Amino acid sequence: MPRKSVTARPPALKLAEVLAEIRMSPSAFYRMRARGQPPRMIKLPDGELRCRRTDSHAWWQT
Image 1 (cartoon, helix red, strand yellow):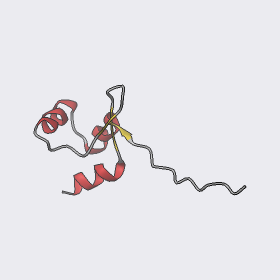
Image 2 (cartoon, helix red, strand yellow):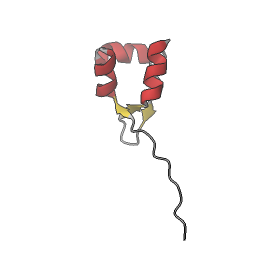
Image 3 (cartoon, helix red, strand yellow):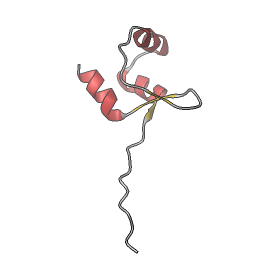
């Protein structure tokens, strides 16, 4: 039986990793988030925020 090809998703970055990359404080990030300006985030069931690297880079470019 042939195996199915599974495309692996790149791992989503933790909020701390995103903030370290863009050199931003958590408080500045949450202020931007309140204004609807942060990169697209994924909220996990446990409440943690994650961001795909492509979304982070696209946001930083704008």
